[in-house]
Amino acid sequence: MKTNISSPELSQTQSPSPSSVHTDNDFRLAIAAFLAILHRDMVVTGHEFGKFLIQFLLQPLFYLFVFGTLLTGLGFANPTFSALLLPGIVALTIITTAFQGVTIPLILDLGFAHEIDDRLLAPLPVLLVGIEKIIFASIQGLVAGIIVFPCAFLMLGNNFHVRGDAIGLIALIMVLAAIAGASIGLFVGTLFKPEQLGLMFSIIVTPLIFTGCTFYPWSTLERFRWFQIITLINPLTYAAEGLRNAMVPVINHYQVPTLALPWTFLGLCITCVLFLILGLRMFRKRVVS
Image 1: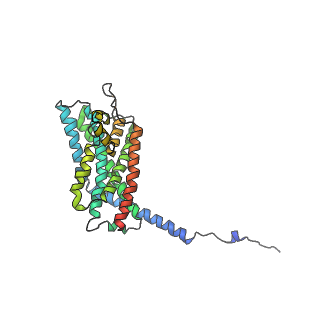
Image 2: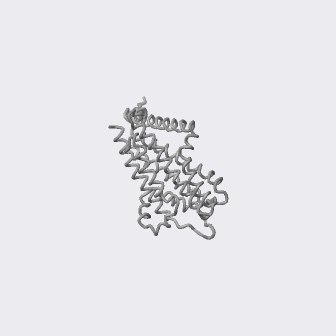
Image 3: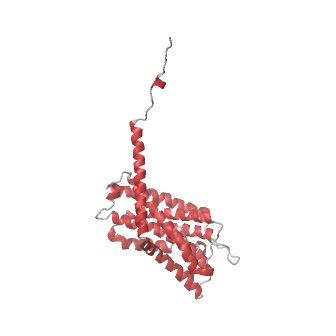
């Protein structure tokens, strides 16, 4: 006569708790909704790619043409100035594109019609809606910045100088610049109303462009120490100087003096973290209220 002895551990089948299954399903649903919104934004931009190019690339390319091609061709600027200008134009394009890619749609979405509601109805946390805007605008900034390179090659001709041994470093600085611009855009987008768009460009975008070492290396401002200090407040300074450090080769035995890379990375990282926190906090406050 045999006796079968079974332990409770073997006789009982472990099953996941309902709460864990519910949490897992919510997470998957939120990720799916997040990717769907991001995909929709990218598809819409793809259908309006020509408008995208005109909106975000026209101004920086005109800067590059006038200052990098015309002035050097007419003899008013040294030909090496084009090599110093290009990193600044790339940084300017990335940051302003990412900035406007969040700010303008967000200001309009939070306006009287409150068109942001269709995104808030998606099954994902409010903060993920803000993060999606940052990621999408960062992608826009990177695309615009990349397009500048072939345009600059055609416009500058023999004055086009870019190091080929620092592609990874250039890409990393471009990514940080895009995230910084988008994070600032999320924060600023919660502060202005649609009828204040012109005011926003006057008090934020214009100073951003001309105090960000776009058209000059930071080290050349020593005679204007007060202005040199002001430029350190501008995240564009760190993006432009970082790209200038990584992109510009030695030209005619002359190495362009720039901010040290640790300082540029520190400035960009602080900007990303600070404005990401402030932007998401203000975004949540605006949409919840």
